[in-house]
Length: 116
Image 1 (spheres, rainbow, N blue to C red):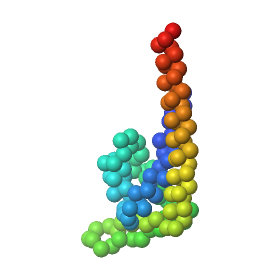
Image 2 (image 1 turned 60 degrees about the vertical axis):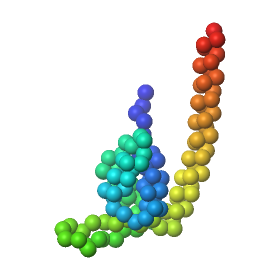
Image 3 (image 1 turned 90 degrees about the horizontal axis):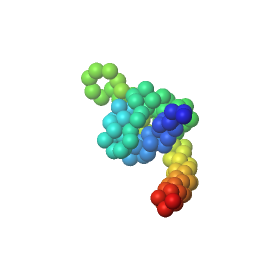
């Protein structure tokens, strides 16, 4: 059986957290760890996703030099990013319906097996 691709929906979650406000990649990762019951992304995956979203025009970044030390990239969602977030929402709703069907059918099969 093939390994599950947990990163498939990572761009949707990154945009979701950026929709709440501009922030850093490490902060997104921490928010995801704290908020999501099944968090599987690692730091490189988050930054690859941010880079892909930036190349697609879904996020922009600025350099924060306000504190001493190295400058940090701060990410902000764009209008394109909000449009993509809407597309992810529509896709998730369709997938949810399919998964609900799957679970319902599986439960029916389980009940039939118990009756035999």
